[in-house]
Structure formats: C-alpha cells, structure tokens
Image (tube, helix red, strand yellow):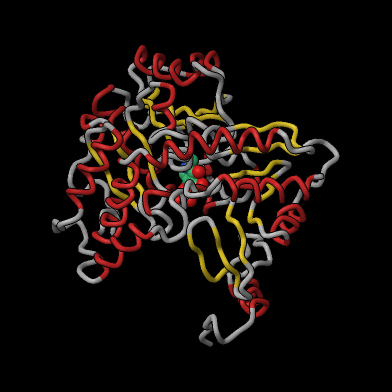
Length: 402
Ligand code: PLP
C-alpha cells in the first residue's frame, strides 16, 4: 500500500507508523506535514511553535531559504560520487568548515554517532602511533550522563540503563568519571589514556553546564598528560549555545570536535570530525571511510550552513534571545531551575507539578511542541525565533505547569 498525505487521515498515518515501525520511539499524537521557520503545521492545518528543533538539528529553522536554494541547485547537478573521486563541493566544504571552526582538517560523515565513532577510532590510532600506548591498551575517559549516540560502542559507556540493557557485550576501553569533577578526571588519567571525550554542555542529560573553569581545567590536564581533548559539539555547537563552538565561550580549544545535527540544517544528515591535522592525519587511505561522507549534496547544504554561521547573526540571536528566554522561564510558577546557555534551556519542573508524556501532549494541544523528559523540559527553539514567539511558547509552558 502506498500512503500519500492527501489519501489518508492523521489517525491512519499514526496507526501505520505504530503497526509497521519498530517501537523504539513513543511519538506524540500530532502528525506533521509542513514546516517553515519556527513553525510546523499538522495534517489538519493546526500550527505549532517548535521548541524542539529536532534536538538542535534545526538551528536555522525549518527550510531556511538559503539552505533550500543551495540544496535545490545541487540536486539539479550532482548528488553522490563516493570518495574515490573528487567533486566540486567537497574541498570547498572542508576548507570553509575548517576556517569557520579555526581547525586544520575535516573528516566527513553523516550521523552524529558516526562522527563520534570516528573520533574514538582516530584517538586510539593516535595513541598507538604517536603517544606509544601498547597495542590494545588505549583508554578513553568519558563523563557520567553522557550522550554520544546509539551505536554499540557509544552505548558501551552510557550510564543510562535503558540505553544499555540487553545490548551487550560492550566495547571495552572506556572509563566513566562524574561530569564537572576535575579531581575525578585527574585520578582517572593514566599513561594509556588516549583521550577525554566530553560534551562541553550535556544536552540529553538536561542541558547541564559544568562549573566555570572545568573545561579549561580539562584542557590543562590533557596538555600536562599528552592526552587528546575531544569535544562532542553535535548538540551544543553551531550557535545553539551562543557561540560557533560552545568551547569558544570559555576560550578553550579541543584537539578534535565532533559536529552534526545543524551542519545539515535538518535537510540531510551531515556530520564531521574537525581538528588538528597531526591527529586526523593518522588515518591512511583504506583505514576508514563512509559511502555518504562528503557527498556533494551534503557538502553544498553544509557550505550554506557555514555561510550563515560566518555572518555571526545566529550566534548573536542565540545569546540575546537566550538571555530573554532564560529570564522568562525563570519567572514561570512551577519551574524549579533553568539551566543552559544561549537559546537552549533545561527547565527543571518543580516538585508536585505535572510531569511525563501528558505534559508534552498538553503543550501540543495548546500549540507548542516541547518535550518533557524525566522531570525536565528541554527548550531549544530555532534560532530564527522572535521575542513575541518566545512569549507565546513560555505562556503555554506556564499554563501547563501552573
Ligand atoms: N552526540 C551528541 C552530543 C548528541 O546530542 C547526539 C544526538 O542527540 C549524538 C552525538 C548522536 O547523533 P545522531 O543521532 O545523529 O547519531
């Protein structure tokens, strides 16, 4: 059976998904059919303000005209070559992304998890080839409550039981320390430590910002011990937290960064590892690869993203509107704490106030898409949102929590 949006109802779409798709998500009842800027519309024509932004994959909003134009132009020319050939987008993408991020080299991939997997492989190879770690002994230190994706290796060092249970055996070679605790990190680093892998601001954990000075301390420890610092900026980077890279805000540089989500602006999956040439340069032809990594369509979209970020407008919007968003949320009755930076907030719901799936559904009924997760809301509107739209969204949150 072929389902088209005109042929069947919203309920029938939901029923098809429920029946035919693997049950690894519990979606809300809305069936979305269109999006523009900060707004999406369901199949019955109801509009919703989007406070989720595809978990930061839509920093520039739905179907930003510059990005759509770049994709359409590329669709009419060339979409995939494989890396056995050069194409006229790839080199430009790498050089422009490196310039934007102040880095020296780019490894392209498609999904976030693939980028982090690649960074782990590179760090291990670097440890054996450059640091002199005995073969098979490389360790990577990660933080508790981390989220780096869903592959077998990524869930091997997750501290979330539901991400791990039933998926073993796990990949060895990871040590978990509490996020934000420099003493614990100091004790965990050994001569076999290849890298410290962290989200500078932990997204899935509820937008958790570490204490000021922690990230600079991580950099210092890595320098003292000859250890790589890998910053996973897949969710917090690309203007979400108010800077091109969240680490910029603390004047800290990582050796490798993983980027994803908004690098493809919600059009196509694009991710990358960017960083030091002497580290990424440990890879030799044939040792690593990805069929879709660096394809011309992805590169043209990401180049349009880089052009938008190079204006600085989105970083500024995130900082200014973020301050406004945070102050509005802090004033809501029923909010215990607001964490985060830029247009990004982890909103802890006060004791005794409604929580759970019904909160997300109640917000949707009032025209706001925003997800409740274990007692907190993660608020991440597209960076094209206006003050008036922030007011609308916060008003719905206040009504639902009140
Ligand atoms: N790293 C971080 C920090 C993330 O937030 C995510 C996704 O939420 C990932 C990695 C995985 O990205 P993907 O779902 O594209 O594999």
